[in-house]
Image (tube, rainbow, N blue to C red):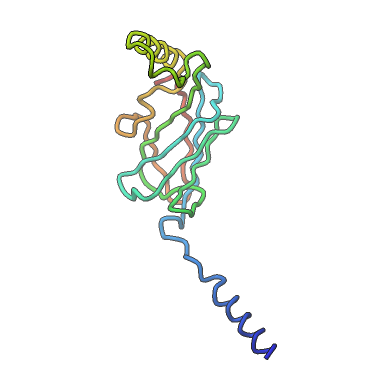
Length: 166
């Protein structure tokens, strides 16, 4: 009886290991992509870099820059991911969150403010973002971003972007 139970358990273990989903074709043969983001030559950390193609909308391609301004692109599909992306042409977008100072952050009682005060607060917020934005808004929109990238089949791509040029 113990032997039968042992073999039954052994069969179950072998039957279910390695039988998980195989790697989708979209995550095979990825080419390496490294994107460096700087502002007037100085590295920009924590910039979200995304790559957009006309096809395969189910894939997310991108990365976040490190302290050296370097993002290594990963392709993600559902819960699976791989380093690099498929060869092809892409539009690159960049965005960087700029935290508001405490005095400009939304407050619970803001809804009760008179419209004039709400408008003044929104104007101050907009002015803060305009002054402190490191990445121009045009670079954050895939429809209008001027940054294009071609990823070669085996060699991939490297790109250096100086946001001060936009």
